[in-house]
Length: 362
Image 1 (cartoon, rainbow, N blue to C red):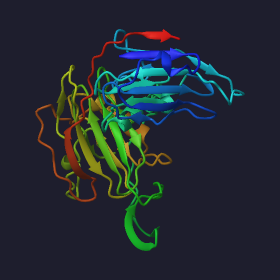
Image 2: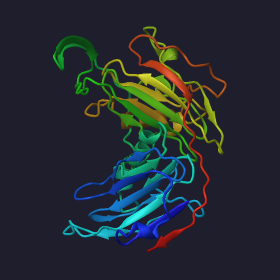
Image 3: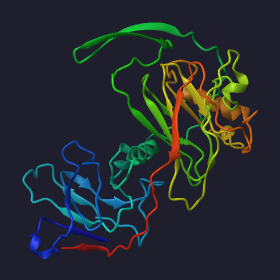
């Protein structure tokens, strides 16, 4: 693996003849905290040229599990800070060269202040995992150490039927769906997938733990190290499966236990589909994980009493009462208004080992 940092563009005559393709990546710019493009798919021998624009950024290797922390030597690399004045609009601009050694994923971030936590990350050969990598980085910027307020369960608001007219191109469609008062309004015709990282070394939380999704969107859970689940519950009983507490026959979803070894290089996934705007509550039913705050929500109404912080606080107060153990039942089929389970399977290979020749200043 070759990584070269240069103070300015140099003649290609001093660089060994490239046998592979060349990818050009712009780093930052006026008011821009991102790499452009955010990821590339490259073959061994390909070259990735980073061009640093205005402000002061880095190209620093990290890992999928710790997106905003530098990967130690000998596998890590770091361009160092490359300051560019706002008034410099013509260059030449600092550059850095990375030669791709193999097809394994390479995870990168900017270590300037909180740029990584604002989503300034990059990847080479991420497979389907880039969205999860970026989501994990941004979740580090939204975490809080302040204890949540005490919470008590209150009555759930009633679902109301909404009729909406949606225009897609030349077609106009009238649709009806169930909506909770105070929930988000649908904003897009196309669906989105929301990547959620579950657990990891020393981590008992979902990242991010609280999202807003539209009907038709999917949520994909990426299970990391240890043994976790994603199990649907209710606000009033956060640490008990919905199937055990529902009074109207709801079964809810359950990923089942997803054991992942500490040295694993592939990670299982589990996907649900959002059917309406009603809040969705979930937890990890492994031992005392829920009682330690390992809960998750979709479309929690943050302006009301049944918000995410109250849900998590209630889980901690109940201390996981009623949770099952790791010998629990297999995944359950969706019923009623619960999100639809679409798929589960092994994720792309994420482990890698490479030789770094070091940063060479030209």
